[in-house]
Image (tube, helix red, strand yellow):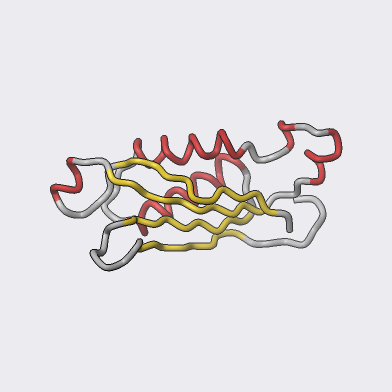
Length: 123
């Protein structure tokens, strides 16, 4: 299976359980691997047949800001479902990190994998 990757996407959004967190924007760092057959896009150099990572990156930030939640776990589940439905992605692995959430840790994160990887040449 081919994969389209977005690594280290930094977004600002409101997330957190505590009241003070609901009143500020915090940084989340997102890594996303999406299963996709890139052969069709590569054949004739056609953007319309690939996953547009710029569009998806903007959609991720928009989704996070339009759907505030308390937990990164909740955001991960909802965002994965949204992306798979909106862009017809058959498989993805999504990591959402929240830098600075724990004093002595560089980041805390959740990683989920949804859908089914395939070795078929067309998805």
